[in-house]
Image (cartoon, rainbow, N blue to C red; front, side, top):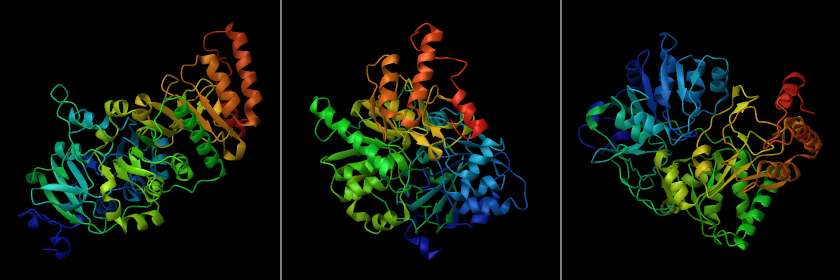
Length: 499
């Protein structure tokens, strides 16, 4: 038996399941559906996908791939480039995968991340032929200890016909951080007994029928580092506007001094805005989110955050070395959950989560597009932003007011694709300022957004559009000039600028 794996396989009788990645890849056949671990480049299977890429050089096959969220380059780049993937869901973030989706080579199903497990449970997604799960250990009682994410792994393991485990001793040992709670079938399940962000209500690992384990593969590839960039002057301005808004909420008696639990979406802007709490007066904060990025650990280091709950840990290389090199320092303040729990609408509503997500673009009424460039080309996907925004105490969207060096206004007359309607968006924050949309009628939202959030280069043009829309509609409830509503997008498509 491989001595490196000896201490990690603590369940007796699994020693003869150890196989090479090539052997495991030989079990994957054309037309199969794979459920794979991983959430935002964390805790994803890596070694078997590379073997599948090699296999594709001599054998033509395609598979459907369902995960927790985006994966590292081994799947979302290399498998996509090799033409192995027929269909992908529920989220991705790699340029190669994006290109394959937008050229029609890969089918893509974009969906709310909290919904994905239920579709698997009901058999709408599947049947899953193989679960391929990265783990740090298999316990004495047969539980799989995940690595840096949980995502959809518990439901994938539960519903898959067979399981392949990538045992990876090179990944940080997070045993004791995971909290695996799997709801029963709808109509039979009880309330989820989670009352505080730091509560533990499940098991330390993923329960598994060991008879379904077909193979165990030794892996030694670490997670691809996060692609976030450091905060800049404008994201710091967004953060300051947001902090001032929260101070006013406390002053008005609508929030306690330590706020309510915070959620921050994946990506550089949301991470940078959360980082703004570092030099603020706020303390004893709680995080109830899906992805725990660098900013969360900066706040933990500064003792600003007392507990952080999520479904994955996705860090830059520098932050990862610091955190994983001293993981015991964080263990009692971290909880990783399945994404159907981290993103569960009832929990989000009950705990009163304050959510911070990133908009690709928004319009003058507060509708938000998170996913589609010019309404047609997929960027990454909806992710968990809908789960959190629709059920938030305060649903906040952040974005810079412009893009492409000033050729694009992030605020347009009408979004080219709707992900979050005006009914779910409470607050908009750009480097220009804050628009509080709560309780406002459509025409009141227009004034709040244009006056507070739009870049000066585009403010007059947006007012011109709106005033003309009022005129042509006879001052309708939600004035739009349908002949010009998407003209800004058309102008950019033709001239590479909205100006």
